Length: 200
Image 1 (cartoon, rainbow, N blue to C red):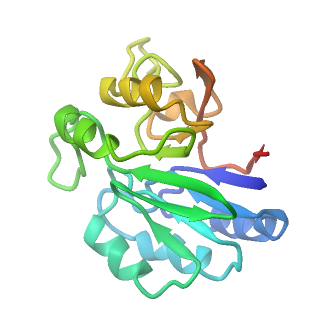
Image 2 (image 1 turned 120 degrees about the horizontal axis):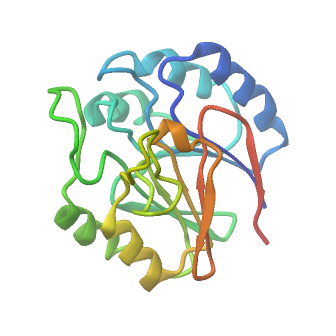
Image 3 (image 1 turned 90 degrees about the horizontal axis):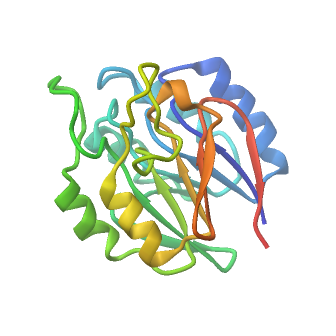
């Protein structure tokens, strides 16, 4: 299975167009959140992503409105918005959880999930799945410019227990392109670029 994965478009129409064009070669397209900016404008990029024919799995970012994304995706035949749910495509299970974990930004638009809520949601993640989160696991691909780590403890614990094949994430912009490993799980902070992965 050939996967194209990205995150943090933040209303960047040109980046979305490039991703859709490249997705012709992909079996699965994955978007790890932040289609909008400051809670507005997810339609700018979602409408473009919907133009592709590749099955697409999305999670919400902290800049997104979960209700807006539901409204934009509810009739998308090949689009799957996951927030504490899973979908099986091509024999592979994908589990998603969006938002900022834990809340560090108190802006009204910020979509956040507590560590406790994340732990409860992640308990439903099957073993050996592909885990898609907006927030990285704490200590992995989550370093800010000042050297602090802004990931999630709940995601680390879930990865240690469930050992997904991949954890695709975003959110921490200075760590775009960073990766790491937790056991057999390969963690990737994606960013708004074209990132290819193979799953066998």
